[in-house]
Image (cartoon, rainbow, N blue to C red; front, side, top):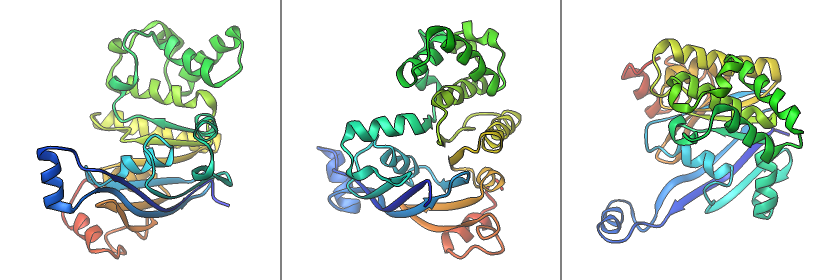
Length: 267
């Protein structure tokens, strides 16, 4: 069985009231179909990439898989558990332990009033049974795992660079030793050298810990460099799924994918 399986996922939103309601109804009907019938599987230890332009539905899809956004319909299976059939409390408890999300915007995800040790310690308090002394040791280990020295535990988010904030976000996600790590635009806004560092870190986590990764990005070159398999998302649907060799300029099948390569996007 795959680690994660999604079957015919739909996530729809009712249109806004007022002028937003008139806009959406005139353009695409009574509901907004952010995710419109997506099915896929992710094997244990795999790096699965989801590429899509802004607004294609990729973030809504993973939020729906994790229960952060309600599904309209469909099935989600994780470790043979039918998440769509579990009560919300049971589903959330399972996912908080075994599946973690690295948020797209680290400034919004990190409490500016918390030092880094408190950011990490809070995650350990909520999701583990470690003693206070064990949590102190674990926070240092988490920082070391993402390439930051223990001296950073006393710092606050505003004292860190963009790449360092990303690393702290990854460290917090690792606190529960999850089986599945989902990274939403992990290199957005970073320069090329920092992008390479973050990608190398994610790859090493997979190699050293056997972790399964889902990488969300609007950079097709990044996805192709890192991922074992790639899904191309357009207007809430997967239009093409395949290995790096299959989703390539020479072998891609869908017109949208061919157009991406012909447009000479970052490859």
